[in-house]
Image (cartoon, rainbow, N blue to C red; front, side, top):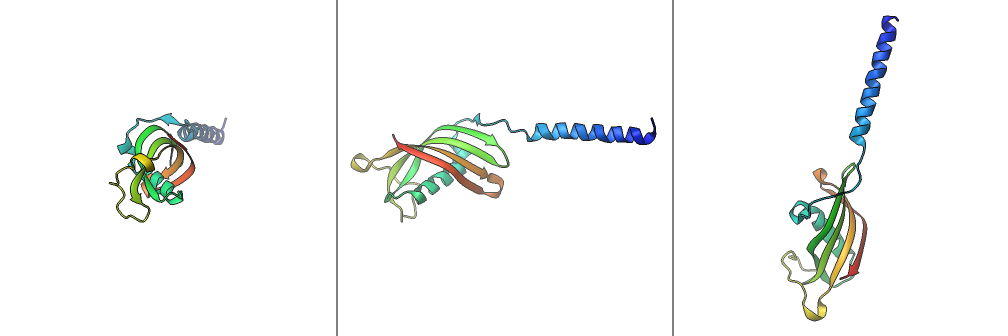
Length: 137
């Protein structure tokens, strides 16, 4: 075997090793359970409730009461499947300060359980709501 043949084999071997390494690096494992810490997910949940309120026909704003369940998957960004309990507040849609709005009580009280699929690229502050469904609690 000549020197050229050995070089070809070496290049082929290096290419094969790189392909295996890259395949392992790019293989996505699917959704995994994540600790239910609202603090870790605040920007994502803020995006979700803002999207919900913008799309809602309700006169009043809703806010997240509780993070019930969450899963995450790393892809080209971060994908979340979250289940949250939201409640109708006493603030109307045109109110500017709504983070501290108290929840409605008695007659206008309304709670929903929502499951949402949210895609985010947090390092560039990009969020997209891929799917959302809510039901009364």
